[in-house]
Image (spheres, each protein chain N blue to C red):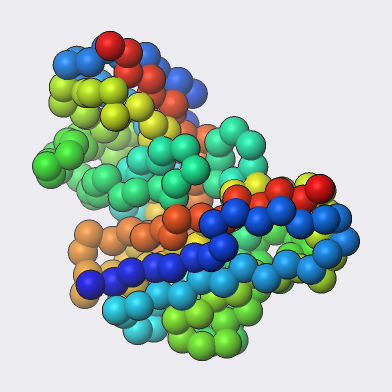
Length: 113
Length: 117
C-alpha cells in the first residue's frame, strides 16, 4: 500500500479556489487515488476518485500527472461549509479483493469569511 | 439504494465493562466490511476488515474483536474495556467487485462516540 503525504493544515477564504496536493511516490500500477472529506463527529464522505489525468465531478476536480506520484484535489470557490479534514488515499481496488484503504492524517482545511 | 446503519451514536462505559457495537448494511450483498477507530484529533486506524461471513482480518493487536455472523452484519466487541479504547468508531462497507460499481470507495456509517470512564 502506497504511503501518502499531504499538508497537515491549510487556510483559505470564502470564494477562493483551494488546491490540496498529495504525494504518493510509491504508487503501484493497480492503485487508484481516492479523496474523502470528513466533518467533525461524522464518517468520511467520498469526494472523488481517479487513476490518471483529470477527473471532475459536481464537487471537485482531481488532477493526476503522468507519473502519478502526486495528485491535487481542487475545490472551486470554497465556502465556510467546506471546512473539514480531507484525506488522500491510494490503494489497489481492482486486484486486491479486500480493497483495503489506509487513511493518513489528512489535511485540515479552514475556510474563513 | 445502499445504506449503512451503526449504533449506538454515543456510549459511555466504565473501565472493565464489555462492549458491543453493531453495524448493518442494506441494499447490497457480499460487501466488504470494515471497523475503523479515530482517536482524538485525526487519523483513522483500520481495526478489522471482513470479506465474508466468519472471515475476519485483524490489523492491530488489541483487546477488541470483531465478528460477522451474517452477510451484512458486523459486530465490534470487547470483554473488558480499557481507557485507551475511547474514541470514535466507524463502520464502513465497500463492494466486493469494484468492476461492477465504479467509482470504487468506502461508504461510512455515522459513527459511535465511545467514552470509557
